[in-house]
Image (cartoon, rainbow, N blue to C red):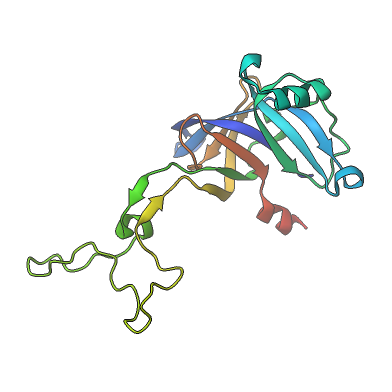
Length: 213
């Protein structure tokens, strides 16, 4: 069964495994998420659920969203995201999704907005190799040739300096190390995209599901 949950990245730490090895983990506050709206093939052409996460003061919610929450009789939330699921029959509006939908050892895909790093040069942005660093070179960290003189233009896709980070990134196949349902905490091995306090989405691994089939 497909499943997913919204969470907040709290930061990174490390824990000790049973054999004494250190495991670097990302701490995520996962849920609780409330089902705000259910979409089906009959009404919308596809199956999905809209879930809300994180409390918010009512005065900070605009009128269209207030009407949306009131229509479905749920409390306003800071974030609203849609999770595409094959089977939505088991979920109803008002149901609460908690961290215990995942278990220790499961593989998940984590999506978030990567940290923005501003304007970066070609070497930092694309991991280029720098030029000769001898004193007579006078060309150390430049982007290199931009194309042919006959073209009189820069070809599309040329890797040049520009804005780095701040993009939607999905890291696949991360393993859940520990789940604490009482505190709504999930520990995920390795790093996940996003800064501390940013919103992330945790779904069951697509590749693991394909292998199981």
